[in-house]
Length: 208
Length: 415
Image 1: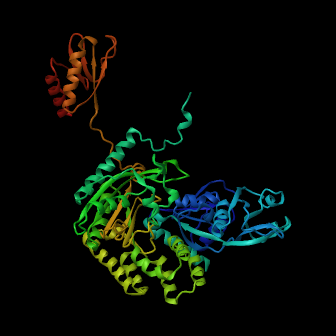
Image 2 (image 1 turned 180 degrees about the horizontal axis):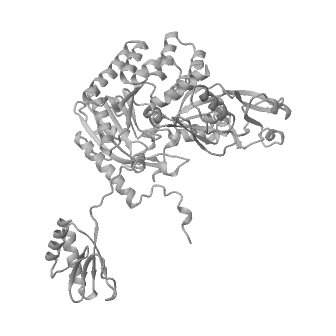
């Protein structure tokens, strides 16, 4: 049996996923947190693990470089990847929101400037509402943008809301609930159906 | 001045080796299509923008590559072949009962912001006009798998869905906006979000259950058919399902059922499909290598009523796959033979070259600058004093081209 390739982002997702898999008997004894290796095999060699950047996980899976991937919904939406989204692993729960300065209202008649790590999500959301927007792609410290006048509002993920609060921002609109998902390449789903279902069932039973 | 900066967009440049693979591929496809009675046609590279923009749910206007003609009309570079061939057939063949089988090898053009190379793609496909029977559906599927077999791919699958079954299930009950969302969720098998979304809509409980079941209706044909029977809502759906069952029966007669998986959640981005839809996957290739389906209503757009079905291979993806899997046969025939000649023997040498080429040999001629240049590689030499044919350490002399041809043929027979 050929092994299937699983793309993961290093960090929290990776650790919790490996934990889940180990609970159900698929072990990765070669893996440890500090290792800088990017490829690991499970002990029974049924799964080949590759570590990539979170935002790249959907790309690897869409192009078939990985058969399956585990990644946050935010990154799936931003990459607009054409993949199967088969399982909600219900981890890393947070929200995608529009946030701005307290008391700020969104005026549909006015052009809005949005700073975000997720310009595609921001654009799609406001397009659906019929609001014309300008997006500015930032790679971090997004909360700063409205404070210094770079943008009117931001679109970002919020877990506790503490960062927003400390910077004097507040949630204006909720866009979507975010959690970790299992995504599958459409071709692999057909050609490696049995192996993929095995992994899916393993994860499903570990979740329950 | 340097043209360095114009290199970025040349991703479709094809070198000699790649072109041979491509050529082999296209030849194989053409031969196979012909054995099923298909005849090659070609459609115009330029089409009217309005032809496509007036047909909802085909090619998105933003995806088309537009040019303007001198009168200001907007033209597009052929973004799809099925529509022009349907038009061609509708205009020329008014008698809808006659069967027509066409195939094509043509480039299609779509805007693509990310990869310049994706702007043009070669498609090799067939379009059948005439009958809407399960026998024809199965024959088309058999043709697809037969061709993949010819290429030497061992592990491939045809994924078959049914646009009619799916449309009957959801069509009347959902608004356009909701329909789009439901389709997206089913397409991505996103059950985690499909259920809460359906809960928000005021749908009949039975219908909701049926829609929720769709993403699970995939796998072995027998299994899918049994499961699908449970969610049939009305007579129309029953008919569509029966059509799928009939197709499966003929597929079994062809002996290709092992290559087939059913997926009733398969939704093609082209809205004109009415019956079976399908795509082909090869192991370790991330995207489909062929796509197609039945489109019985498309001809009505051109004023006739002709049932039709077709599919197309993505030649560029197949060429990459063939290379990647090492299945390409590099042609060794047609190796070149050199003719070296002295200036004084030019006429004799060129005459001989001409005669050899007429006999099918590949000849490269070269004038020898000085007497002492290397005369130890294989080839034909027209020296000042004598004519020599040198091959694998043997040396022959000859006086005229006929003698030379005999020598070469003898030599080839020995090898």
